[in-house]
Length: 227
Figure 1 (cartoon, rainbow, N blue to C red):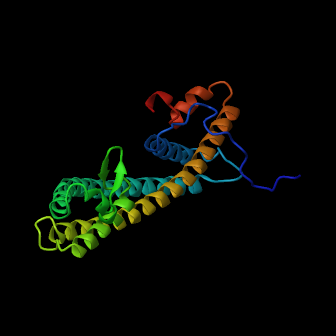
Figure 2: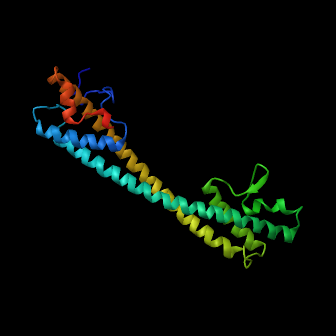
Figure 3: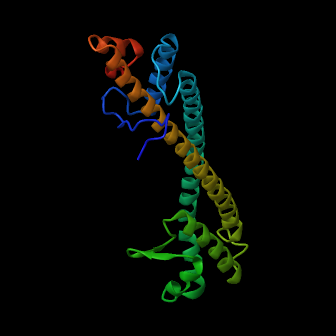
């Protein structure tokens, strides 16, 4: 089957050992190579151009920056969720005491399902999974109201703010994770294209400078010891 004209050749990624594995290093190398390619217009590829490559590097740089910025916004969400988890686990001790005082120690386990608790090893606790834990908080609020504990220190007045904020943070976390996933997808697609071009340029330089290609590659920025 005849290959379509101007179709990028199949170049195995990192076959030369001269391209970096880290995104930040790939970005830096791409910027250097793009600048050198611009100064050496005699080096050409039939399926792409220096200007197209320059645009890919710029987009890769922007996407990489956005990925780090978005990812950085996830840390405060995770941190606050951990604090709420701790507050919930501490408060649960007192909820169990309230039910034990009202219904007796022997009857206490019968009420655990109403509180949204699961048996984990030898104890009844909130689920580890945060989506399930959020639902447990909602279930606990209903149980506290049904059993007349709304006005208690560890009644609904304690748990409603936990549930409300937890729900807000979980929704924010989902939105952030989706945005991160999209940024990573775009970044990875650009990475493949950039590596394809870089490896192609390495082969072209080797072909055009058979006697001194190692020094020419270094001049272009392919210096493995730097990444």
